[in-house]
Amino acid sequence: FIYTHNPMVVQARELIQSGKLGKVVSFHGQSDMENSADPSIPHRWRDYDAISGALGDIGAHMLALSDYVVGSKITEVCGKSSTVFTERPAADDPSRMLPVGNDDIFNVIYTYENGALGNLVTSRVAPGNKVGERFEVQCTKGAVRFDQERMNELEVYYHTDAPDDQGFKLIRGMPEHGEYGVFCTQAGLGISYIDLMTIQAHKFLTAVAEGKTVKPDIESGFEVNVLIDAMLKSDQEHRWVKVSECEPM
Image (cartoon, rainbow, N blue to C red):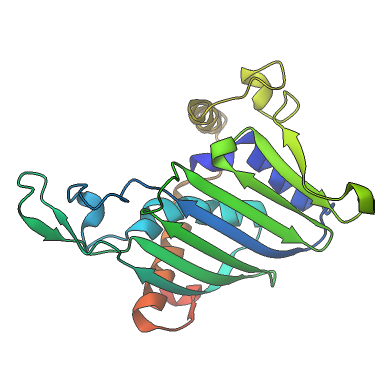
């Protein structure tokens, strides 16, 4: 869940928690990639029917971001999947086709414990999307949105802006934004995905050295897996599913 360490994502969370944007009304998440958009791509481990497809592979990242940014747990879900390419050529013999046993696309709507609504669209067959991890959080006093492909930027809107000055404002990553300043002492230079790995490693090692806990952790991963189980169950049974139905007894 490396994207939760992005200083601009942290800034979005802090803006929401501060109350400046009011109460969260809805979360819109998009987790799209094109890594399976070409039907000639050989059959891979991602296509086995024993695992989740787009939802578990890339949608899991947005589910982690959702909980982190909104600050509330998802309680009930309703999902629908689609397999666009039902078979792919075998890697060792392109003339032999193998079945694809999981989802290429998975859309889901859900509710949060705090009463807000959310939705996630995720696809591994989305042409033009390299790492399309994007979200927008709409609140009673404004909104905030983020795009991982522009990871050093955050857009914020406030209802209190004058009528002739309304619209999303761009916030660029600066040394004042948490760990950004560790890597760049000047605004505009921009940190990278690899820097997020360094932030994550530093938090983990610090927690070990000081005997403390740090999020996300193994429990965070387990919680997201429970969400995925609930969404898969919803798709299979064509109904709303309470997350609690998939929690261990």
